[in-house]
Image 1 (tube, rainbow, N blue to C red):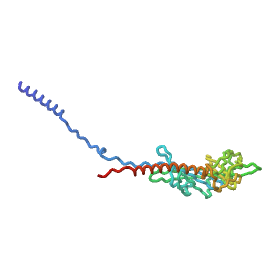
Image 2 (image 1 turned 30 degrees about the vertical axis):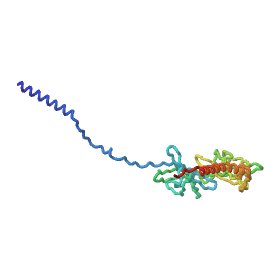
Image 3 (image 1 turned 120 degrees about the horizontal axis):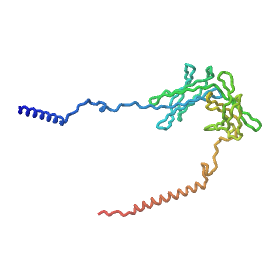
Image 4 (image 1 turned 30 degrees about the horizontal axis):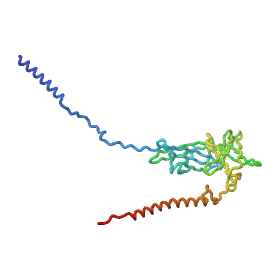
Length: 308
């Protein structure tokens, strides 16, 4: 009996030792292989540039309309103009659309497209236009629309004794009848080489008329002609209106190129300045030549080692 108990105790101890040894042995852990780690980076499509298209129009006194557009974008906070891109101009009339033509943006990303055809407005006297850029491989498409009421501005020069002035009249012609536009601010400008020069403003009265005085000392061309502009800018209903007239009210300025006298401010400097410059340059270069000559003499007089 004692032997049996001793055997059972020994068997229990050996099994416990076996379990402990198994726990201490290193065991390999098997898991499903993650294939995403071995796969290469996923190719992403290049991000397209999103251009912004600004669109406006100018109704002129000769019944033509200039459609103005500009394309630009922003990259890393910097505004960049987009040249050499095609923009289409479309006339929208209800559900129908008629393509008027297209133009290519210039170096400044701008376009001016002139509509010479007589356009009939809708029942409300409005014209609807659309400017569309189709996009390309690196840019998203862009599109803008505008609606303006048909109108025009008239400018009439008036000379009373020594007083020069222009009479302005704003007219709504959208319904086929001329209706005066009151309470609108009109600017008078003189055409210049780069930008028009503003000489006055006026607000139209109940009859749509206003008067602005013109200075009599404005420089003109060789005959004294100046171009006067009447402009209504960025009106909510009519957009931009413009009309011009040429009048011989300026001071004649000759456009003949003449040879300027010798002076410090002209391309032909005085003789004494030329002589002084030549003498000074001769002295400077003379010193350089003397130094080079002396170095050459020293090099020539240097003793050569004797050959055994």
